[in-house]
Amino acid sequence: MISVAIIARDEERHLGAALASAAAIAGEIVVLIDERTTDRTAEIAQTHGARVFTEPFRSHAAQRNRALERCRGEWVLFLDADERLTPELVTEIHRLALPDGAQSTDVTLVQGFWIPRFNLYWSRRLRGGGWYPDRQLRLLRREMAHYDERRLIHEYAEIDGPTSVLAGHLLHINIESLAELRHKQHEYAQQEARTLFSSGVRARPRNFVLQPMREIMRRFWTWHGYRDGWLGLFLALVMGYYELVKYVHLRHLEHGG
Image (cartoon, rainbow, N blue to C red):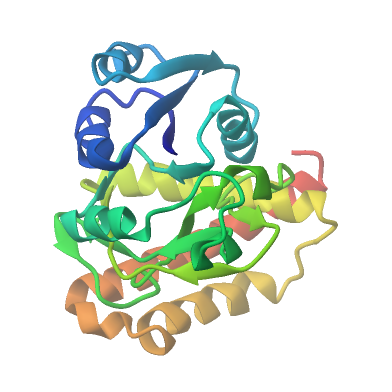
């Protein structure tokens, strides 16, 4: 059985479509809701047959670990509310015939699957800049997966065993407005600064110049952001700016900020 798990806060706008896209492969649906949620997220989840749990927010990694504990399936597919399974991905997962328990099939050797993801900015699929193929380790054998709770942002699963890569895609409705982009990247910059600080990293003067320049060049040239034209250049500049913001926050933390 596959458990589809979503961690969410105030996701009434996106959640229903995400769950609908996964309905064909879900043996159960688990939605773990941040207790700060004030909208109809829980009600929408329940209308889709989800088991709903409310937890105080600690970190994204901690929420995913709590969701893993709540799931009952041998396999867990983590999905964000602003993501959709494409029909091709649904078909591919069906064809995997993932076993429950230690059945003697080739797939039992694999403990997790990476899934490529299309990122949409203003409804446009990006082709470069690190936004594609953007593979995510999301289909996991539950007992072999864990998230490092020291990572405050961009958490990823640690798998005890080999992994493989699927061909079908997730579709990620990433950014739809400038305000959303500004809010999201500012939050990421703060969380990344806290992660660096807790790891013992300290800001150096060169970081305020070289790191933003490196990020811009990496996004636009090394990772082929130029394939997305003016939008690729804009996003490279934005990511360079928030690299600077990250180190400004790190310096503030060093001074007790």
